[in-house]
Image (cartoon, rainbow over all chains, first blue to last red; front, side, top):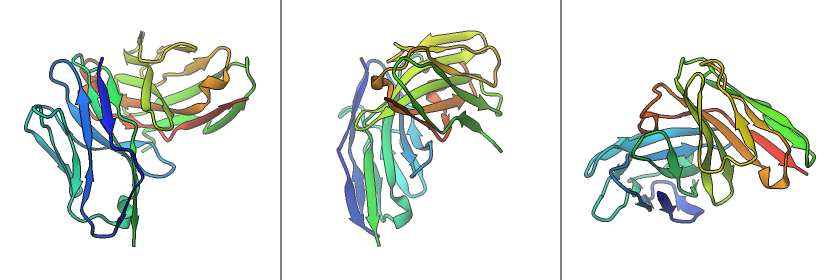
Length: 112
Length: 116
């Protein structure tokens, strides 16, 4: 079955540091890939997505590239802010597009 | 702009009790789903619906029932609560039925359930 593996957190960075959160997946076919973000006390929000190999999703300074050869979708940001502190979830859709499989989540803490 | 509304936000149950978690959306979304969130395990899909009158099982359906009599509402029922069902539950919807997994999911704020 499908699965998503994320690096365990928490990840603690200083403001303006470079961020990478690793995500690898196992899936049959050609899934779409997503990053969702959960701020404290809230539900998840879509951050970015990519629907085919070599696509790059981007939003709010975050980027991730769909790498089929390495089955990865790593999240990056060049300069993090305190307001980026949250839990980040990598996810993929099944071929029918009616289910998402989530990774375990990575907590990011950014210090001023 | 209510979006996806879940009630209650917090609930404590005793083992064997029953309850219903309510979910309503005002965006006319066809697709609705329930997830549970447990530490270190991410979110796992319990049940989903691609339209009124249609429901299907997700990854962890045991112990839960759902129905979809209207487009707006998708309640989750626990018939006989167990401590293993202690979790945070999220309802999510999307604007398309089939293929909704490739679209953006809109989440409610969650319902924290504790079963003693």
